[in-house]
Length: 209
Ligand SMILES: Cc1cn([C@H]2C[C@H](O)[C@@H](COP(=O)(O)OP(=O)(O)OP(=O)(O)O)O2)c(=O)[nH]c1=O
Image 1 (cartoon, rainbow, N blue to C red):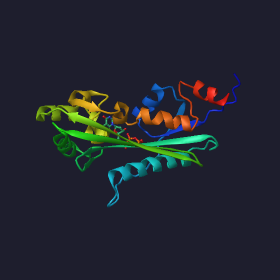
Image 2: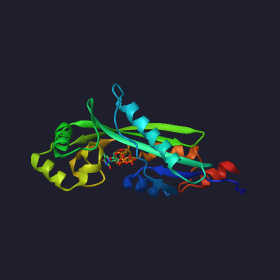
Image 3: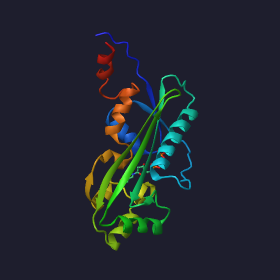
Image 4: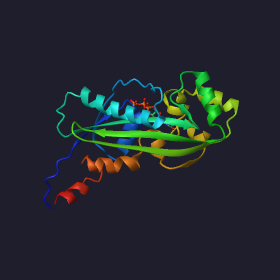
């Protein structure tokens, strides 16, 4: 079978070790940079528009940061937030902020939204994914103890479903990897459009023959 396929290269524009682990899980070769993009919602900006803007700005900042040639290079930015009713929950600033998040999430269902932006100097693919998560009723003892583990500090909504936070969850509807920060079900078709390899490289070799 002739194989003239030339793979694109991927830059993960994120400091998140969880996003790196999810890319590694499906054997995507990538390098990683951590762009400094200020996370501040503008007046009147919807949560959906906000995270899409941040995903775009992270991807764009990734392209600016690299000193590699940009030919064939794609940059991936992502942003995750938790939406409890119309209340936006990002990373907790301190214990009081975390505690009020846990009280808002306790015994109810919320949304986890992740926006993706895969960008080259010439093209861009964007997607957004929503997962519904229902929390158990949380006691004050559980909330205090979970904070002391240190896990909530760098997580949107103040919890990590992939860690100790799994014990807070009653049910989940939709993509699990979306909650962790990188929805693989949405990402894989984007990788295919951009000819970025993952374990199934034969996909393009067949398309190319
Ligand atoms: C709800 C939830 C969020 N999170 C994480 C995903 C994101 O990494 C983080 C939300 O913050 P983000 O600002 O989306 O990402 P980040 O600051 O970790 O990384 P970067 O901006 O450099 O890309 O919360 C979990 O790991 N598990 C969970 O269950």
